[in-house]
Length: 364
Picture 1 (cartoon, rainbow, N blue to C red):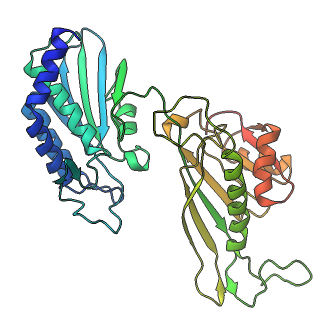
Picture 2 (picture 1 turned 180 degrees about the vertical axis):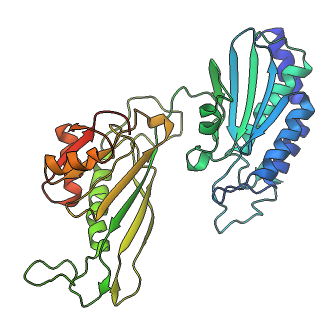
């Protein structure tokens, strides 16, 4: 450790109480996601950045602080101040920031207001020790990370508000660097049906149904759910080859069936059932956005992947024959090609009926 490093660490130790108080004050400002209301915590964070000497701006409740010059390379510090919901069964005030036995209690005390605190005070230490930067340092505190970052980091990147040659991204619970992370995909399945009285014989085959019979979308969704449960078992047999930090156990990909909505009442069957499947990892990395249509257009699947999974947007259509697929794509001004066989088979298994799979040649 050289003299400069020793000075900076000493300075951080001298700021210990100030660091703790700032982290406690952040915890006292709710920033749950959902609902994703960040104005108060954004203003609080920006005020501190200005106080230590950064040039600041707020864009869509994301705070950007800047110091240095344009003559060299740029380094990004990034952390998020949104948190998951508080939920129930807390034994302490989740917005209290109490210190008990040397630990700070509260929602976001670790994930991830601790990292916002760390990046700000690391920058303050550099400034107070009069470290001459050879380039530009951007300090970003963002929201929306817990639900994908589209209104957070993604917005700042798309608008060209931040750019760097390297990034140090702080996130709990580690206190040591990791050079990689797994991708995450959120998927929403929407299955349509036909609403009718419960005695309308839904999903019965001919000759036991007619044009007035209903279609039970819950039973249709069960096929998808059963497929995902079986797929999860398969994913759990394949461990990552990358080394993980000590104490981490998640060496496999996983599927989390997180939310489901559907149905009206006992003597009725539903017209629409939507299930949000969260944290679906690496099972559809050959396409970013997909649609699945059965012959009568009642079944649709939309998928969306985070930037870490981005491989180019693709529209995927399942149809009974090539002519139907090309007609559907032609309506969007697109052409199509046959998907790889394993992808076709995987998606077709969900509906349990023979289908042909096509995708457009360009981005969707």
